Image 1: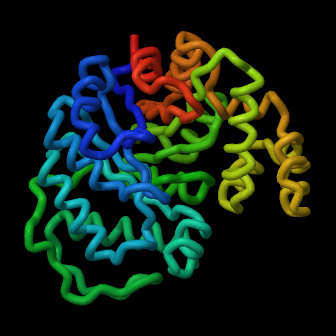
Image 2: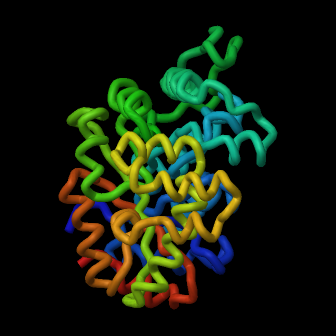
Length: 317
């Protein structure tokens, strides 16, 4: 289907130490990538370090590490450490994240997300290239920082991007973009802003069941949790779903969570959440690839499905 086919780690209900055998199994099944995240579970780097050591066949990526929650120097050190372990198998993902993650959960003011992302990207690139940096950026300042353990080669850096400005920044100054919460037919609109010749990765949520009602019930709860966050709401207005999702936003703002879920159209759920038989799910992933996603990373949504069966059933053919 594609030369790259990833899956999101760590798996729910599996300890980090228990992932060793899972990594071997993933590589045996044809998965090429494992991609972590950094929200409210584990940090983005630790699972990838384990994967780098335990399974040399896998490419590694983090989607994404928030640019607010680490100091600029620590961010560069974290990237350099994983690059030293994994070499050219590692792709770094930086992103603004969101106000709940940054400000409510980490106590860091969520201000100027575009500028902060741009500044951290510029700093990290220079630091990883071995430069000694003494500069006042718009959103922070660094004086006299130089990595004591330089990396052999700077890893590719992708930006988590949702709207034109960040997508264009990903194309102009990074190695590409990481997309999230979009339909296959939205990829072209994002690609136009990023430009050609850049890497597009995407996390794709998968509910592997042929019980349509169950899949849509789960999907609606996920959509109302994510797409009511301001950044995602604006993303979908830009994609053209404003009219379809406005009733959900109105009900959510009024405090009626149940009604908000009920008002999400089936069509929107079916576009944003991959569900159905394993074959149908793989075909849906293939539509993203055909639309221009070079690195799809599926995220199995836990709802009682057998993990081993799901991992095998969703593996590339």
